[in-house]
Length: 360
View 1 (cartoon, rainbow, N blue to C red):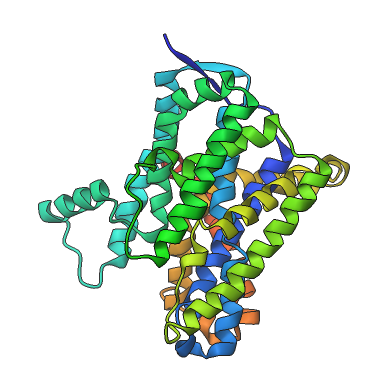
View 2 (view 1 turned 180 degrees about the vertical axis):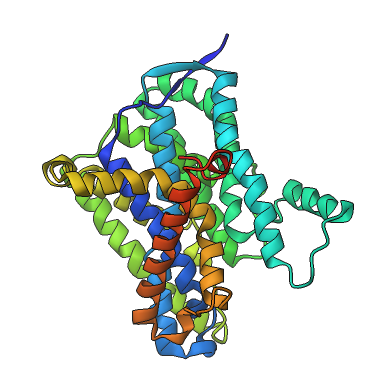
């Protein structure tokens, strides 16, 4: 029987903290998106605030993938392939089906009739990934789970130079060629699909655990990350200005070189802070981090539903981000959305069957 290694059961504090911060950054990204969509909607000044918030959180999803690579590719316990896949798929497929249906009902602009035609359309949407905007992540992570048994053997036996070779080709394929093609009307003829953008981040999670960059190397990476943020912000402004105010999101791409450097910088920054000297010694904060970490996936799944409900007035009050100056509105609505999502997920995780759709 083929076996692969699975993640440690012991808690990794920086991973918990980084996962929480990343999920909150995803919330901020979605809350700020309406301001960045078009300069002409809310005015240039508000657009700038939305663009800065959106740009500053583009590392969130790549960092979540790096975390998955750290946990699933670098570990010490072993498990047969099929039990591993069953455990992982249960935590992804059940939530995907449930939340896809919930969001489909919520997104419907007309009365819903629960009949065979509706379920046929739902299954078609599920198969073709025509689901709510953030659920694409679950499709991507399923692909990574499927290839984990193969990649695990590779990284376990590969020399450092071999892994670096993969990362270099991955960066060239995505951060240079793939990104450049966004500005061109033609694509390269060579098949570089083996170096998928998400797979590179996944392997980086393993690489940084085995080969942590030195202090001087990290300083260079942090500088590149700051430059990446600056380029994202100002470059998006120039591209959008040249497009009559309509957002050009090329620099927001998860495989844009600026986002790659931002993501690596954030991950390494959190990884190399000695959290045990501070947070680990404060029981209340430590317990809160544990609770937030366990609800992070559920918060990701539900936060757009919560955001839509509090923005629509369905519960009797309206908290719409566009009703405020974005300097106030973005953090206010982001914190409110995150906190409500946390409470809802916390409750759902304590209810049998319902806890299957918001797994820890």
